[in-house]
Image (cartoon, rainbow, N blue to C red; front, side, top):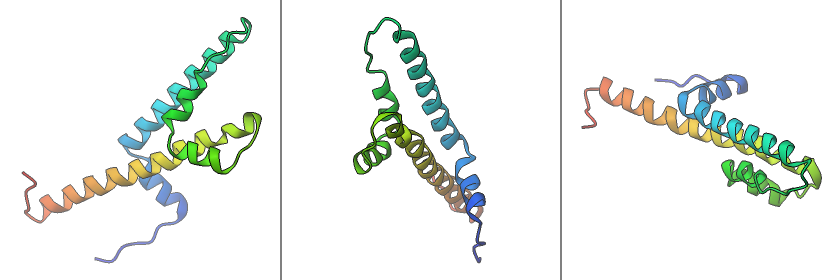
Length: 114
């Protein structure tokens, strides 16, 4: 069976619109919202917090790689977090599609995975 070629937006939608990728992006969003709330609530007291580290760790290793390759100062340096989140969600989505399509093709051919 010949594979159909997809455009770039169709490929992103194919790999990002599944429960695993969307769940990961939801977790990253929740962590980033928690970091933002913690940052703004601790700002008046002057108390420093390491909450921002959790956002970087939630998207590691991609965000760390981006941070080390492109050392930007200030808020611009945080661009690695959304890039890391999308890259890793894409990888998780590709893994999810591979496993589910492999399972679907295996059972359709009469091969059991049990």
